[in-house]
Amino acid sequence: MKTVIEGIGFDNVTMDEAVKACLSMVKKGGYVVTANPEIVWLCRKDKPLKKIINNADLVVADGIGIIYASKILGKPLKERIPGIDLAETVMAKLAESHGSVFLLGAKPGVAELAAENLTGRYPGLRISGTADGYFKDTAPIIQKILDTGPELLAVGLGAPKQEIWMAENREKLKPCLMMGLGGSLDGYAGIAKRAPSRWQKLNLEWLYRLIKQPSRIKRMIKLPAFILTVMIRRLMGRNACEID
Image 1 (tube, helix red, strand yellow):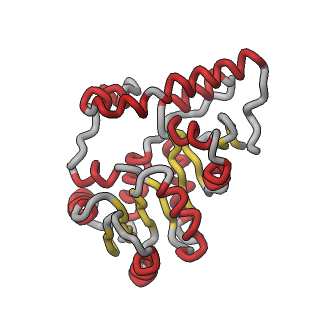
Image 2 (cartoon, rainbow, N blue to C red):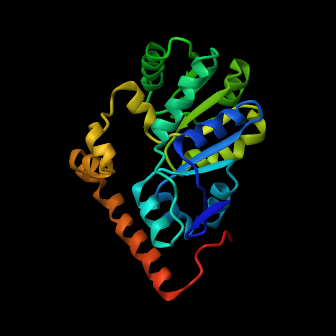
């Protein structure tokens, strides 16, 4: 059963349930979207993008704003599921059976550094290949992925580019499972530092990132607008809880 927020259907799952869902898709393919308020806000005026998000095999709440919105609507989601944590947990599970991952995205050299760090943490994990996100022609990238046959394709092209890319190439890359990771490859590479664990536990990772990167303020302004829109719809009794 989906919890629908501003026309986007979220799977109401815990982290453990999301990991199990991802592992069940490894052999049949598909794509996973970790959606935050920013991408939901984009979908209000971009119906093709909204369709792409709603056609995903799994949509989880990556952003405390989504959790707040679900509570305002009286349909609380179980928990926030950061994409960076979901993907790493899936990779840790794959490592137990010597599973393989292809890392796609970020600046040149970042995916390779991320691969080195991930295999250091999870010795059983196999990195089938890497490629940066600055490619112009998709065909060679698709062929490289097919040639290496990964079970998981981590796509770090940034939203909404990565979601569009996954949807466009879904059938070509089956049975590979794709996950949109935004800037997570920078995190795995150690280039972008995450908030300390106490900030994460308090759901204040967004504030920590804003303090470290004040330029994010333009993006963060969308969060209160998003929450306010949800509150107004709730108060007015307007139905924003259907996928259109």
